Image: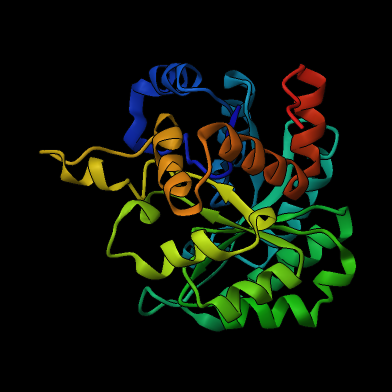
Length: 276
């Protein structure tokens, strides 16, 4: 069993093909997909899609959407999270974090939203799905300031591409690190080195569909959107880097995803899909 720990199935790129996307993922052996929200306007959509497709979801405001929100939206998020705690398919706060790659985005506002959402996660005992782009040290500073390691809530640093020292910092805070399509490019030496050498217990797999397509989709003419069905082939790169069989990769990364997202594990067990 494979778990895609980060895929935006509600994205407009999938249009009317979502059922086909889900069917292909199941055929490929992807038994569960985590669908993160990105802004208040799609909270309902990700919940409905998770229920319609027998997947799970997270609620949160992405750093590149904070300029479209008001401070009252943070209170509204807390209410939505409180309500969602009764929903077994709700598993985390996400996608949240910081993005210092895109120019002209208010960093102070991003940090305010990020730390506010961390506090909501702490209040409800939930892990987080973190957006990490050119912002590793600032993300870690907030986690340390808010005592994330002591809270023992964990989560996933999605699409990780920092230094080994930064990776160790996130692991020390109790987070797993997400690896996906970027790992399939030979020129992605830093990501591939991390995937090859980090402790196996911190690795999870993701697609970030429809984004971060693997190397073979980029080479297609025209290039194709990423989707969860690509996850097992993406995992072959991890197998090559670590000397694992596909069965080992599936077992290890599934166990890590379950540990990172305890409500996901509980839901899988309730469905009879709980590979340990």
